[in-house]
Image (cartoon, rainbow, N blue to C red; front, side):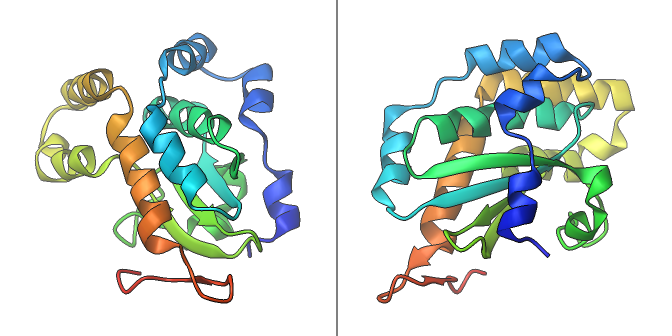
Length: 188
């Protein structure tokens, strides 16, 4: 399903920003405010190998606008990781194997691939404390009120939870085996 060729069909974040997208100014503003802590970049660089992040997203998605720029900056801050973006609605075969709660096509979804473009983990659609709040509390609120609280989370957090969760996934889900092959942890 996910091959090197399919991965390479995805847009780089730079190309994504060059085309007409919804909320372009917001995407750029968030991108310009992202700061990747040096210690997180060092943790990724220390992993060795080369990693690929395949992101399923759409330009209209509020969660994507708050997460994808962080992922782009993280990949730019290291020497051993790159990222491509595929439109969710044009790649439902991939989306439908990464459903939130086994039923929802929520985005963004970040699929971690090793050097051979083999999947070894995925994350999404939101940082875990925010997702927990949305599921347990937020869904009972009126949509506009819920979105206001979600925006507050992203503004306060400044992407730190997302960065930590992605780096933790790299470290715990994709451990290098003795022969250089990626093996999944027991948590897979």
